[in-house]
Amino acid sequence: MELQTFYENIGADYQVVLQRLRRESLIDKYLHLLLKDPVFETLQHAVESNDHEEIFRAAHTIKGMALNLELPPLTAASSSLTEYLRTLSPGEADSSVVKEKYADIVKEYETVRDLLARF
Image (cartoon, one colour):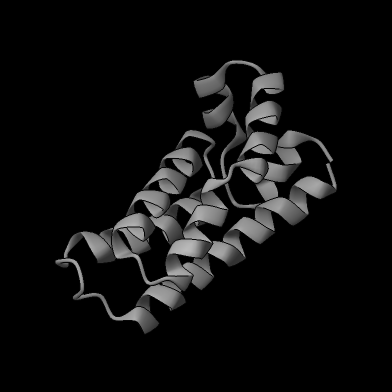
């Protein structure tokens, strides 16, 4: 599968990311680095330990990576968790809401991972 097809499959505009990163080789490199980034594991551990500050930091990092790589579904999922936590003081977050929003991030991450595996 070509990168352009990958982007079509996730509902994103390949030309936007190509304009941003300039070379297909960089897009490919950063997409594969995204899958190896420890921030996803950090987020998982933070959710398991109910550490809302660390959840916020990890989700915010994922949001930035997803924005730069033009991954709208992953951006939306991570943004949803980030913005939910941003509005609350530490300890006010409903852990069931956090886990639901985390599950959305996992789903979108797995979609990216599974599609890239075909590439």
